[in-house]
Length: 95
Image 1: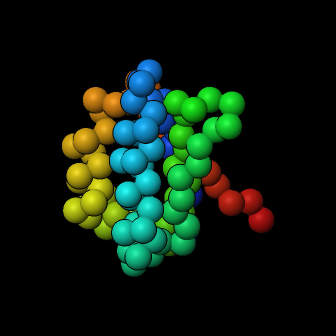
Image 2: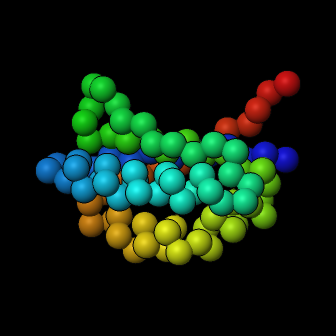
């Protein structure tokens, strides 16, 4: 069953550019991964510190493969100093 996640990031004041950079470099390699259906980063027009990653994976195995990737490890080790808050939820496709 496909898994879709929405992850929201609030950058620390003054770290918007760095947060955008760290999130943006995840897009291309993630899209190339086996089982990636959709992966992109969005910025909020009304809040330059707020970003959202939306990602869809074929199944748990694909999502776990993503979490084991080198680019994910780099992101995980790098984002916290620039992030004030992070929260996520899984979305379910109806129908």
